[in-house]
Image (cartoon, rainbow, N blue to C red):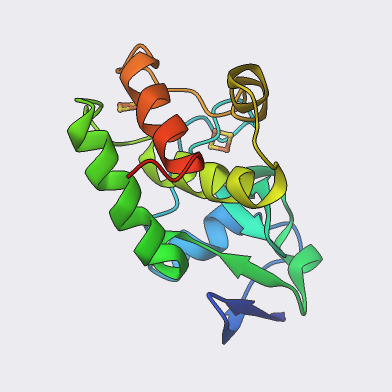
Length: 150
Ligand code: FES
Ligand code: FES
């Protein structure tokens, strides 16, 4: 069956089975910036934005996104550049596997929460796990991004 949606503001048509999840669909169509970390809704690596809000693509049926807007890091490249520079500046670069999902969650956080406290930032990002960084350097970079301290 065909599912039509918008990927980074461009019309996208995917050939899918009714029980395919969006993570599989995107990766099958060469959108490999969306990572498969756990495939069971536990790590956040597969995060994309659905109409601007973070969702786990490994647990979202592709048929559910018919007509909706999906955003991956390719759709927020200016902010990804800013975040990458801040990560580098703070020494937060490690393997990078979690970075694309985290970048999308942080992008949404900045637009949803006005002047968030450190605790609010941590709570918002609780679903995005990182096995390498220990979070501290990442967190400093994220706080600077959210507060426009570039
Ligand atoms: S791959 Fe989706 S939450 Fe881990
Ligand atoms: S940098 Fe390796 S999982 Fe986060």
